Length: 113
Length: 109
Image 1 (cartoon, one colour):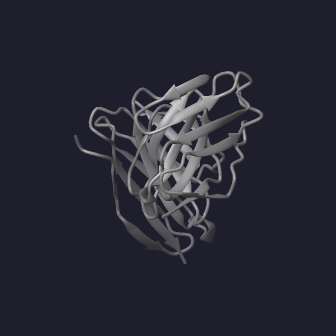
Image 2 (cartoon, one colour):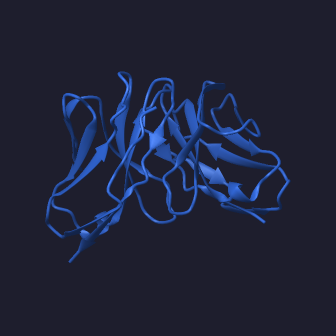
């Protein structure tokens, strides 16, 4: 059974640029959720994708967008990067939407300068 | 939206039972309560989930009183490797999921 993987591991971008982060869900899972975790804080829910449709969204602006592909892998896109976007971005996969048991990847550390 | 409140930190000794309480006064009818463990530089790891009463698995127990305004994660006989940050997550079927700020548990020899 393959776990959740994320790429890249680390990324440095300049303010105003755009970034795409990628996530491969655990085998058999059809739901992917994305979280932002600032240093020393708990993860903040960005959105969830279930069977290629957005299935819930947290309090993040529209410049945070996502996609889920037929193989249930997912992308998180952030436009017009701001310094405060610097954080660990976590992807979690689960079964059938909802707030159920989630399996997290190791995260992508994004630094915006 | 249910906001969660947890103690910032707790200390314990090896072999002791540890209880971490999370307050979620505004929990909604459809909300589930889930606890995760996180080590430095890793993603959170699922521990246990419940809706009401008591749930037990091979690593922990979760106690939820009838009013569901709080929940308590119980870790039996902790070891040094249980030193981590523990998060309480309240979420509903509309997928508005809120992590608490986390409780940093330090287990001492």
